[in-house]
Length: 473
Image 1 (cartoon, rainbow, N blue to C red):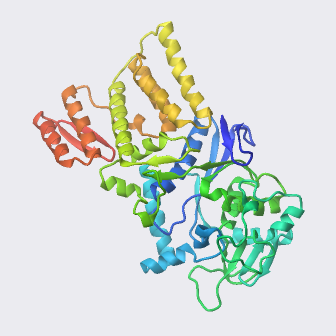
Image 2 (spheres, rainbow, N blue to C red):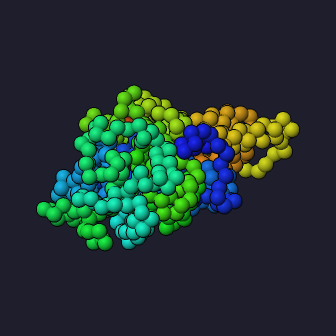
Image 3 (tube, rainbow, N blue to C red):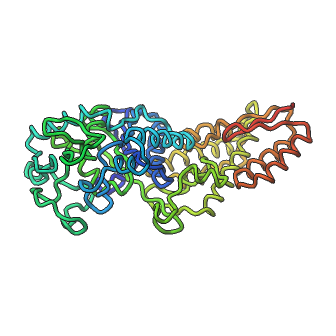
């Protein structure tokens, strides 16, 4: 498999540290608010990487963090060491404790995660559960001579790191960022590129989330958690680190620097993958623009989470994907059509002897799907192969087996579409599929009319999440 490595800025052949095994880390959500469909595009990239590696017979150890402390609002204006803690600010906004806020939005994130049929990581790691590990990591950074103390916290010494022969900011153009261009300079810093490892609680206020440390009462810098948790569960080096393109400028370079300052090994991760932003109607997504949609928002409008997943598949992860409701309509329609076709293949039994021509066709599409994955996770190309197969003259039993195999990567739940019994008339199945489409389009009145027609023919339809069953009363 070949993937684009942000570290080297080129497409490379994937070679894991241990043959047949892969360690993968994805930067997950900061749980101070609802996770948007833009955020979920990044997690979808992590899901695709893990599914593809498993499809290619790798044993995967998958870790995703959940940030519930230390992510400051200053990262919006170019300095992640300034501003308010998003968790404390959210707690004040909603009149909850920071811990209750984190629990509420973590649960909501996990609901969306499951609806989108994403592979559950081997472990979700919460920052507040790894305070000892973060403090120990900072102790090691300090022992190595890369940390110093100023009035508001402990900071990483970038110049000292470079003097030791390391390069800082390889993932981004951090060295070109002019200190103070967007935020006021912290004049106590030895270098304006230095970043917080531990922030002290302000003396005139009591934080809800704060811990004792050898340097003073406070909380960890945002970057520290990912280094501590990845080292604990994946080791000093691992294979793939994944995140949104916004993390490429500061968060990931800082992770890399503080980890490698301690381990002396380069790189922290062999491959760094960054997903492009999700645009909305050609522009940016933002709460102030009232277009920061969530999975629940789309469901209220009659769209299924699987339609959104199909929509994600239509874009290559390194390129911006433009969300419009027209595009989502197309994804919903395509998904329903494909699901309906799969339903027809499912009932086929027995195998026929294939002609040499059809056998080559079968082998050809199998290879094409695999090649799409191996071509820097080109999921639009993979979808094209799916439709080529679906419309081909390949026997339906073989189509059923192919889609079962490929759905390990697509994650569309196509292999879980429930088989209708042989007694189900084609007319009833057609009405049921039309009802699915109408429900997906939010046309509930028409969907109810189709249910009445189904019942008039002597059958009962029961909805089961994204699927349905037909049976005689």
